[in-house]
Length: 211
Image (cartoon, rainbow, N blue to C red):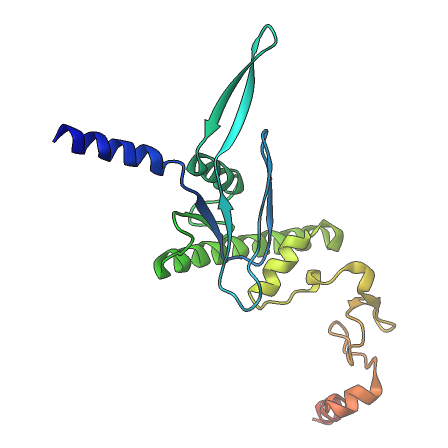
């Protein structure tokens, strides 16, 4: 009985050093700078549901004084949990960047669905913050690229989604419009007559004026 117990304890101790995986359901890659190493959690490819980063143990050293160094080993789980903890900073409850820890790199459906839900919740918060900033400043330079990508991931489109450098001034009202649009969204001026005719926008405008 004692020998069996010792074997179990030894097996558990050895298991601490087995690699673990960080799963990412987001298309974004996340960089984390640790005191002992730099890690990049890869983003998933467009046709894939998730990507993984394999995490192994790492030796670290610390100065104990008198030019003496102390060496310790961090387990894969300790490292992975620290990475996820850093990526979760300043993110509200029930939200996340789409990352979580997996023992074998084969996440369950529930784990994937949960991470995807938390990611969508975070994206919604980013979009809400961008909308509030846009209402306050009307300055697209105050909008972060991540907020733009969050809106695109949610299938949403806002005026601030487009880089100010890529927007043009409407000759009718001076409002910012996307390149190559047929009609100004602000004042209704026809900016590309050929495209407007193809889209039936001119005919619709005539009927509206006549009606």
